[in-house]
Image 1 (cartoon, helix red, strand yellow):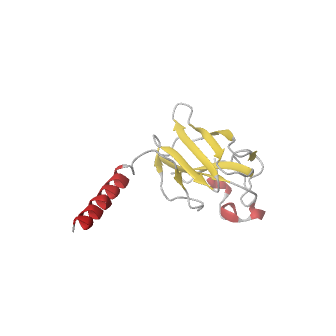
Image 2 (cartoon, rainbow, N blue to C red):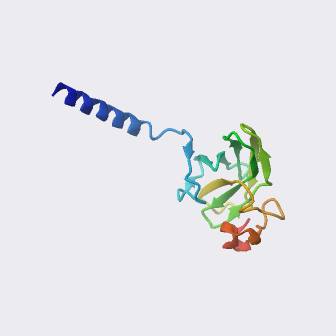
Image 3 (cartoon, helix red, strand yellow):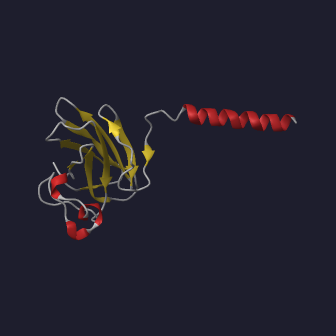
Length: 158
């Protein structure tokens, strides 16, 4: 009986410790889906890893821009890493100019919004050629490569 009480106590403590730590700003790992479905408030920080690229991004109201870093968390070179921000008003900012990142390398991210009529946002890093952007840094996307950008109209971009 003592053994069963001990196991139960350890289990309860483990669950409480897990629940108690769930509100930290610790990095989370995205499952690779385009959008996590979780929209952030303007004062929240995005901190997720997707396909080996860890993106930490915040909104700066004074400059009406999103600032942060994207980092390679793998042991391999990540090719054509870029970042996009999706605003609550349906507009998209980005992608940034693609860069190759060596293992452990970080790159600064800066995306400026042209409007202020949004109250939420989400973001994601992209890796590889599958969703490559072209043209202006915050402009059009290459629809020949398929993916999300095949389904979006240019009116969605800032």
